[in-house]
Every structure is written in C-alpha cells, then in structure tokens.
Length: 156
Image (cartoon, rainbow, N blue to C red; front, side, top):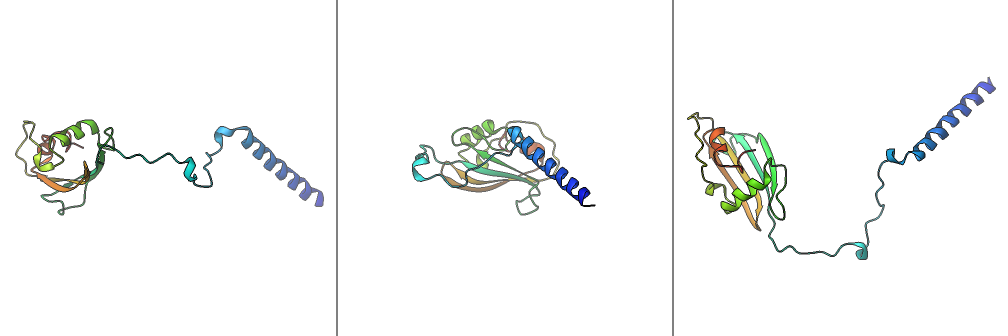
C-alpha cells in the first residue's frame, strides 16, 4: 500500500515538474508581466500641454420626443482633438460636421434627404467637452430618417 502511495506521489510530482518546465519552455503562452511599482519621476515622460482644447463627447439616441422620455438605445463616444476617434462609426465626418456646427446640435443643417412623415420621435443628446467648452444639448427628430438627414454626426 505504501509503495502505491509513493508511486502516485512520484507521478504527481513528475507531472507538476513537466508542466512547470513546459510552461517555462513556451514563453508565448505566459501572461504578460507588469511592473510591480509605478515609474519614478525621472522615468516618466515630461508632461506636455496641448495647443488644442480638449474635445471628448458622448452621443446617445433614444426613442421619444425628449431625452427624458426613455432610456438611451445606443451611445457612442467621439473625440476630435488630435485625430478623430471613438466608437462613432464615422468619427472624421462627425467631427467635420460638429466643426461646421460650432459644437452644437441645434446648428446642424438638413442635408436634403427625402423622408416619410412618420411620427416616431427620436432624440439625440450630445454631452462632454467641445474645444474646451462644456456642451450638454439634446435635439429631437420626427423619425430615424430625419435624424439621418442631419448628417454623419447624428447617424450612429
């Protein structure tokens, strides 16, 4: 009985050593390591100030005639400071449209798209910072087609 226990223990030890050695032999499977300490002041890159004011926004769309009518159905982020980005499907076009509208939903213009007269109101909200200025604005549209007719900023 003692020899079986010794044999099983020896086999388990052999399996553990083999697994540890295999893990060491394949570094591509090991998780990436992170430093255990934060970099000290001399290691950090010097802080630089941007010549451009920050522009980071969150756009939401919800069903209803106001932002308070229902919970948002979709939300996207948009940054326009250095290079357009975020989760908006067309960030460059959206940033251009926002630039033309001076960062305001109320100044967006209809692109001339023909839409039906369905009354299924949707509301788009714009919140965040546009060129250093805080924005918090909502605009309602009679339906999704009309919302899309106001350009790439509201089409997400």
